[in-house]
Image 1 (cartoon, rainbow, N blue to C red):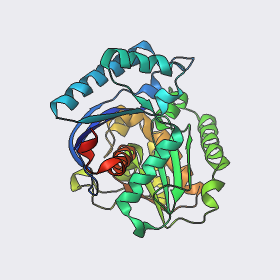
Image 2 (image 1 turned 30 degrees about the vertical axis):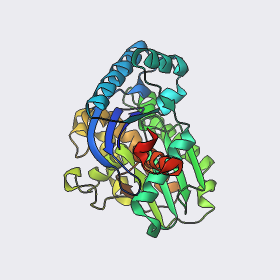
Image 3 (image 1 turned 90 degrees about the horizontal axis):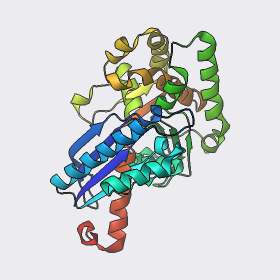
Amino acid sequence: MRLGVLDIGSNTGHLLVVDAHGGAAPLPAYSLKEPLRLAEHLDETGAVVPAGVEALVAFVRSAVEVAEDKGCSEMLAFATSAVRDAVNSEDVLGCVREQTGVVIEVLPGEDEARLTFLAVRRWFGWSAGRIAVFDIGGGSLEIAGGADEAPDVAWSLPLGAGRLARTYFGHVPGEDELRELRRTIRATIAQDAGQLIRAGTPDMAVATSKTFRSLARICGAAPSAEGIRVARALPLGELRRWIPKLLAMSLEELSGLPGVSADRAHQIVPGALVAEACMDIFDLEALEICPWALREGLILERLDQLSVIGGEPGAAQ
């Protein structure tokens, strides 16, 4: 079947068109992206501003046209932290539904962590043993761990790189502000860290999504042009050496780093502080980078559901 996955993230709107069937890896066929940055387009009350809603509606409308043109038999549409946490979430989704006909499901943070874990498990397989998974998005940080396909523990924290950039980096922060940010990040992560730590050291610690991929690239990982099957990692020691350099750079200098796009350059420093805290608190020397994340987890779960319902996925449409 040809499936469209519409991901309304805190940073980016992304339509991924894939050819998929049970028992095989989803094969990307087309991708449409737009930097919506919803996590940073909130007013003082926490509502998505009208300009943000208009941009979202326009992107969804374009995504519907692309999905139809590419022959998608089904489109799964979901939103994550920025929409989930907005005080006008229902109004935003209602506006999208009325103007485009698309019903967007809001994923709870725990489901984000669970589905990302599923994608990582399928990518690395059973030989990975017990895994711990970390995902820094625009609005939230997801953490999950376990030895099966479903994680034993999964939770979400309001530590997304976009959210922190909006709160702490609207100007150049001083030493006291950076210290307070670092303390806040670590205290928030440590509060529930025991959920993962009690199971012992994981056999593999994994990071997913754009922020971690960018940080790994800065720290020497292979470029994306070498393909998704090249092993990549983010070493804690190298990240620690880079953080003071990142703090001293301008946005223009940050956007010139390998793996960093101009629209996300302002999120690299807060993302790096969250990544460092994760590895420090959970005593991890490095994180393996997984090319699959939430979107792939959603696709895999949908294929599993269709297989249970009645054979070939296409029959359920």
